[in-house]
Image (cartoon, rainbow, N blue to C red; front, side):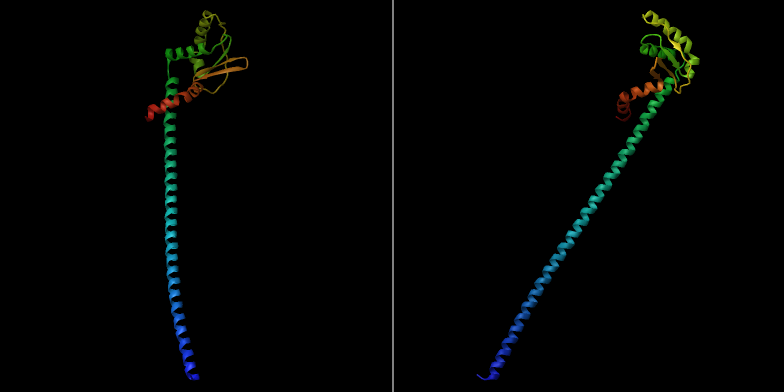
Length: 198
């Protein structure tokens, strides 16, 4: 074989090898490109799903916040209505006139007196309306019940509406109407709420 034939054979084989390698590279490039497209689609899909999840989470959070605000507003409104009921009941009691009111205060006084020599501080309006007369009847009842009949009125400026404060030494029992309402409010509030909102 001549040198030219060998050279041609080598060149031909080299060219065939180059074509084969180019075909492999092209095939590999197509596979890599296809893989990258699939990865890009997967990343895009994952990003969309993450965005949807975040949007749903945000929506759920917004709904929960709105529901909480609504419940809070409803609770505030219910508390205002309950307060109105207690305010009206207190007003009706303080607006009682004459014998009904006097009987109520007398019975309350008789329940809280222990010895019968306590001091009674009436509200300004009660002191003028019923003070001395009521105390005289209370003392008579106390004597009949075997207690001292020495209740006496003490004039002091105290800020309360209706009722009285009973004092013996340094101990005081607050029987003002405001105080009485506050003491029973906790007990009665669930019943009032049930009547209003059932």
